[in-house]
Length: 286
Image: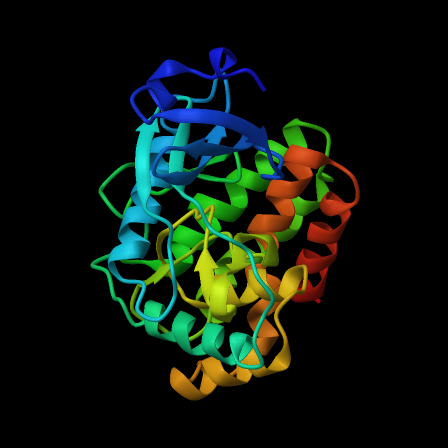
């Protein structure tokens, strides 16, 4: 791609010599920037919601500050239309990559916040490119059901990608929110969108976290997302549970905590995600 086609507020002053498109997900265009000081990663979405990349940058910086054994790329530049980040050379996993990730994630989750919700007092954030409410609260079941699941169900129904039965079911389940959400836990720092594509393996088999939707939440949110699309093996989960044991019944709650990503995928991509979310609601309403 011609450098002149990239926004100057993102690349100006970085001594960029060339830009090469790379794979980077469904939300933004992605490029490797070759500079005089080495490669950088650029993600760019013309016309992005003004705070989309601001929220991601906040999450990256907070995760980086508390990353422990995990790696998080440095934010080099942030604008309303994109981010420039430290470049990560991908590499093969080592025999210890999965266990290291489980222990590292457990260490990250031991970072405790004052309330569930945003990291910096902002009232909204994003899961993918779908806006979500991050107004802080000390009540996790209220946050999860009233501020996350119900609004996403309503948006999905409005868009014709989620059955109206979903609203009937969540209205039946809402009074059981305390039970369904599990025993009380403090708010942990979570990645928030931890599918396998947002974990990169770099040089030496080290684990990197990218593309976060970071906030303060119940830590099972990350475990549920890791289980939804696969890509993390049993050694990873065992190492996590050994380092930071999960509350009894956590496996039974995994599907419950998969509701937000299923609903967001239904809203953004359609397909069978709306039906999958409905199946989850039916499962817990039995």
